[in-house]
Image (cartoon, rainbow, N blue to C red):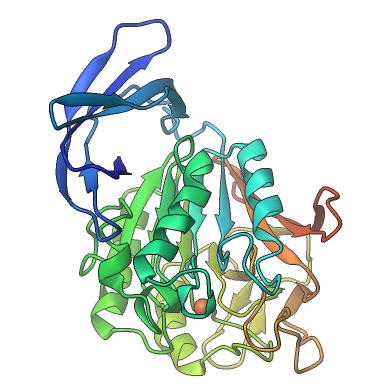
Length: 381
Ligand SMILES: [Fe+2]
């Protein structure tokens, strides 16, 4: 786990199962890329799976001890058969942004916190410091984003991938990487992890080109996951495979490079963002060239017949291009099952050994609860 304190100093984590004695693990720390302070990283080992833990963080600084409040979080399930949920979100912005473009971030984060999935998958583009006039420095904007996500991320592990706004424009990978905690993986920027029966690969695709070394990493990673018996393969990244909005249409070069790998290992679900609207395909084969629709059933599909690509965006911030959602520039293609360019979106994904259930939420502007605008299930025998 990783946390940031305004003061430098030696950090610790204290943790326990509810009602038991505290255990303490030391953290390592390094200077924060933010406004002073430290980034602390601690690794907790031998936790019991499927268990709720309480924890608090402590820092010794200038002869004093500072202790956080007590938080609660859960560990991953014990058995492959145990059901869990995760959420995917991206393109958030920082709430209160002048101009109103980040009008969706507060209700999205509120709903995610209330839903309390086991983990959060971040698809990139978080703070948008480049055009937010409140932030005179990059670090100030990034720190504001972390304060905004803290109520969620202190309870629900955040597995973040990087978008173009984390590596290009005014923000840099070196600003964000020290603050996110994730496995090292490929070149320190692609990574993967296993939760129950599902393998998640966070692929580094923040801009319009992908690195062949990262593609090779994904190929080997997915092969190893299948060999290890993963029942579900889920890949998430920032750049979309299919996108037809006016702001950020998909780059076909990324499709041509990645889809052969995705199809070779029969990835079940691919998640992305960047283009600020929602588009979800039927299960597809040969998607790198001329997509073949493996099934026309928009609600239920058997696993293994094709990959479903879902671009789920934005989760808070409208596009800087036109100050709105990214409206479509073409009629809906026959391989797109559902699309919507009039709301903010996020997805809830329920996983067990037999099914992968995805519900895509559209967040209204009037304070009403979100609507589920797409729900589909992939079934495996
Ligand atoms: Fe983006």
